Image 1 (cartoon, one colour):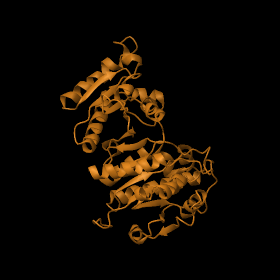
Image 2: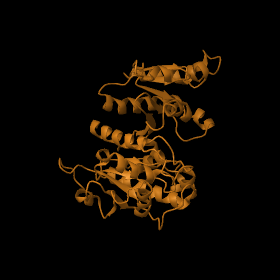
Image 3: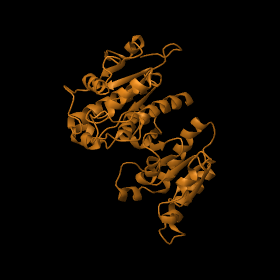
Image 4: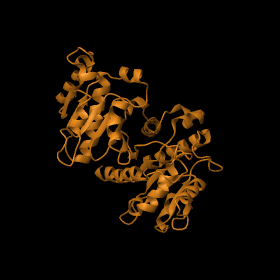
Length: 353
């Protein structure tokens, strides 16, 4: 096992993402444009794919892509190199912008290897480039069982801890400097998301959010809870979930000493929580009832600034808040800002632990 020291801290692992998307490109751009942020980072992916990406951003000479045999090899690398551990089975780079089961499987292999390395104490944390869920499904076999990163990492964490998946609850947080949201449910249909609005799921989300943000803020976060229905149900006129489910979960969380308020009308609570140049938001984070309710407000503020953080894992994992962008993959136009922000966030979260 690799050991950290003041002169050689544990590396952060960067997973390549879907090789047909913009993941390899934004990784190469991050090493090119933000070398201080990327210092100590090692890419888990396919060497040929990363070399193609480095050439795409016009830096094959200034940033050599070097294949490592182990994580220990990163210590002796020159500062301008992109170190890569070959941990997937791609025999050649795949075509840009096309769904590929080979790319889906390669992405999954990189995620699993990186997660196991972090869990084993060989790396400090991981930052994941975007994957394509259809490619993951097209991969078939074990990879197709997972709808995304979050569920795959949850399964790895559970196996490492010797627990069932249900015993390692996780939540998705999307954050930028203006707004943070945490979701009660993640990658399910809207009908299933409504069914997931239960007392236990909401209370569990509040506990996970409280624990995670307390570590980074140095104090208990003030959590706002969004309603499910328009106007938070308007006293039962537009739905009973607020009265029957959401409010009791908020009261139970308050009884445990958590700093939580709501439920609030979902069309205004995000504005109330937003930090601007002229005022601080009323809340540190908004707990949203389902995926799009919570993610649209953050992404609307700018996907280049948002970071996805998985809460509840026994490891640090962040990612940019955008997808594979197949429509611009291979053009050199992808913006690496969100990815660099995700790396910075991973370092911050690791320091806070």
